[in-house]
Image (cartoon, rainbow, N blue to C red; front, side, top):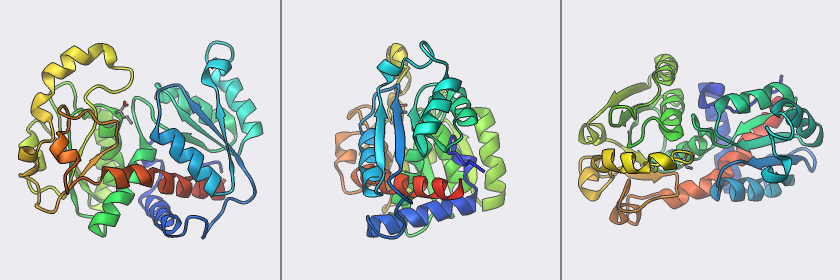
Length: 307
Ligand code: NVA
């Protein structure tokens, strides 16, 4: 059966743990344990800006002995010149897997339904599951294990990262606490899905308004941009609503003294995170950025093994 990663709960708790263990092994021995079987081509498509996703997939696929093939979205004019179903069938005949960053979740689902090869969501408006594998790997490295940790996600809980932390955190048995203003809380359907997952893992998902309450005693504090890609025309309203949710040294002082701070980047210093925090001793954002490569190498290897 062809497996995909379209949302974080496409991996069961056991599968997520397996991918993270492989990621750690690949990080320790980048050319070691499990190279791709043959020089496989992996198609990379980006309808939205990218830095970490493009470079980490490109470098990672090369390290696996594969061939990263970036498809020029402008030339392909997907959705205008050709429908997603047709693009999926063509790319599926030329590549072993397809990695796609776009807006609509239903579009990556359409791609997956027609490609015949694994499809990886490299960020949609709804989810960012590759980032979450890197985040969980980073937390595991710094905290030793995941189960039972308290993670506070502070800021725009309704964005891809808020939804993904709820789902992936619950899958890992983490106690995820999201602090977000009204109208910017995680999707209620996603929270229900995450709670159903948490019931089997010992995790939990709580949604609050108060950032101090959320951060209190947290082992990990996570934030993300207040203005996600595609939301630029809402900037003025968002910059009015979010300032109480900035991760500053003051807010961080309520967390566990050994808490670590994550941010998927790009970071807007002085807004969702202060310079002092992102440059400070509790910040692990550069490990997190590096871990995109290791986590995605593991994911591709695992998906191709299943399919
Ligand atoms: N929530 C952010 C994540 C960027 C990697 C966005 O969608 O722009």
